Image (cartoon, rainbow over all chains, first blue to last red; front, side):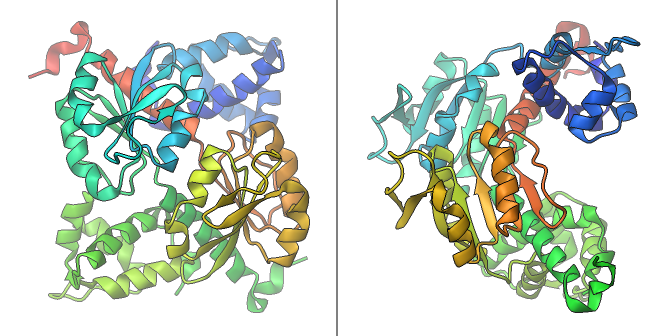
Length: 221
Length: 221
């Protein structure tokens, strides 16, 4: 698996391949041609062949792709064959929603702890996991070999927390706070900026709205 | 405002400018040079000047940018000066978290209704908004001029629901279901695929882990 030769653009498309192949597996589809997959995914068959050739050309002429094999290979490339211990910091609505997100475990992410500063939340149980005080974070991370911290705290708390987490050995941060975190090179941050996603939707709506104005009406059927 | 001449790449960076400028405004910063902004945002000053010149060169030599003016101009470009009526379909954990997300209203998105199929959730009140049956969707959308629907339903329900919503006049879908929706051209979909975000984190961790293996250790200090 020559992972380092795979371009970033291909990597960014892999989760989507993984999702479509997972859907096919659920429907007991055993094999699929690049043409069929291309129709489902709305990308060209040639793009699919090119992308998937990166992983050793799993497709066979006249047979297509073996769905289960391809799914499992992509899963390995994405690191989903490994197990990660994860904690959630911030037991508010979003933190609780993520704690209840059952897909986590299916992909190898095991929620080991949930933390908050709010005494009214500490002691509550979410999916059988007790909410603990953030005072216990350092010890908990070290004793439970935690790999990933999910941050659903107020943005003002995020920068200092991220530094602490890095010092305590966290290797990955799934950051839901609307701020960019500065972390040492050996820590990976993946951001989910909900407000920015909403702004992109808003921009596209405003743009379409403008195109619909009477003075630009010429292309309308 | 020559919106149509602005490249997609610039548009994708705008929400981040907007966020940084908002942070500066909160700290009562009146003006900022491209150099200072560049240090904060970790992009080059020349990139910032290029990007912001798209909006009529708001910066002035020796003065820098007027933070409030730039913030307000970007806000207009992003369509945030408009008001949108929004509904949330799926009152589970994630739907409830989003309903409680106070940033919505600050950006002009007003949650008018929350819907679910589950009789145990229907009638509950979330931030003062009653959860209604999805049977009422069509009428509610039409009577309340709803622009945007947020989808936090099981993925199997999403495709049919998206078609219905389009027919009932919804113009934007904020899609949290792990599936790609097929909608008419006049409907905009913005996806938040949490599982894919988690996979990207997983990929980066696996990649770093591989680089840390003894045989690749040569660059370590």
